[in-house]
Length: 85
Image (cartoon, rainbow, N blue to C red):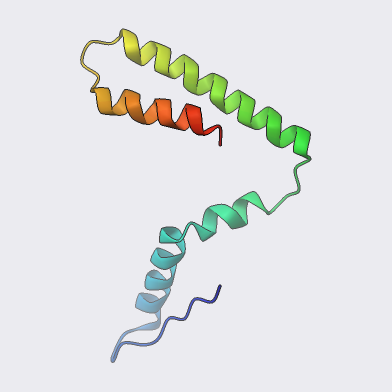
């Protein structure tokens, strides 16, 4: 995957760098690089996913008790839990 940032007539280098950063964030490249920075054994990845899901379930349980939480938020959290990362 190649990202090409061309100068748009009179654009400074700083503006080009900002545009490049926005593109990488939009394509989720920064998160991938951060994840691949260190090797994690498969058991560690599983353990991290289980901890994240446990944390989400606890958070969802607390949110359901609240009165002024919109159903969209709860639905989004349920989707995250069901996807299983």
